Length: 206
Image 1 (cartoon, rainbow, N blue to C red):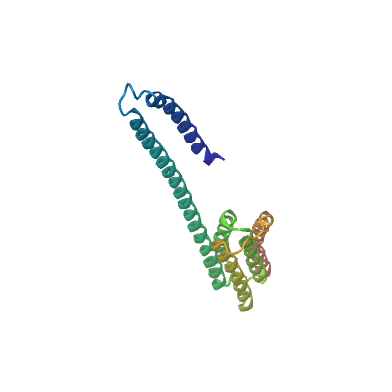
Image 2 (cartoon, rainbow, N blue to C red; image 1 turned 90 degrees about the vertical axis):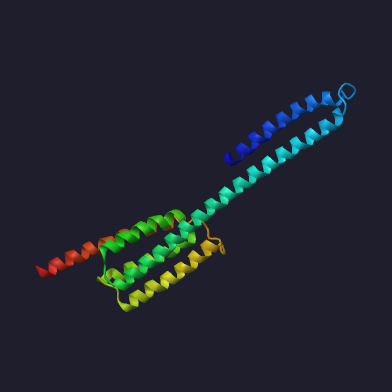
């Protein structure tokens, strides 16, 4: 509604100006005996005024559409950057195959960014990736089988990301909030695993 206020204000001002011009030139139009060619000049001037008003309205509308399009392009670029960063970070964690606190913290930040720009389908798919990581790190490190399971979940995630970017599929939005919270809790559990592993190591050494 707020985006239409400038258009409505412009239309109201143009209407008021048009009404005033009509009354002024109506008197000139009827005064042909006093002013030669008054009718012709009046019609030419009114035609020019209408042309200017219509051109200004069209340019204003075109500018508004271009700004909206540019904004959508910027958002889409940021969305794609975050999606690629999530995939690369998960792949880096799988390649490391051990619980690295720094990588987990970086993935946590990406998880929050994902919650801002991603659709419900992407957030739900990322939840499965985190669940696979959490299950794989339960014994301290990722085995080859665990890594394959994580990458399978990443494959499903990339499908959801592609559908989101291309708008090829519509996902229900009512589950987004629940999925975001589940992802956050899973990130906390991944972070807590390191503490449990350190405690277990200290206990065995003692």
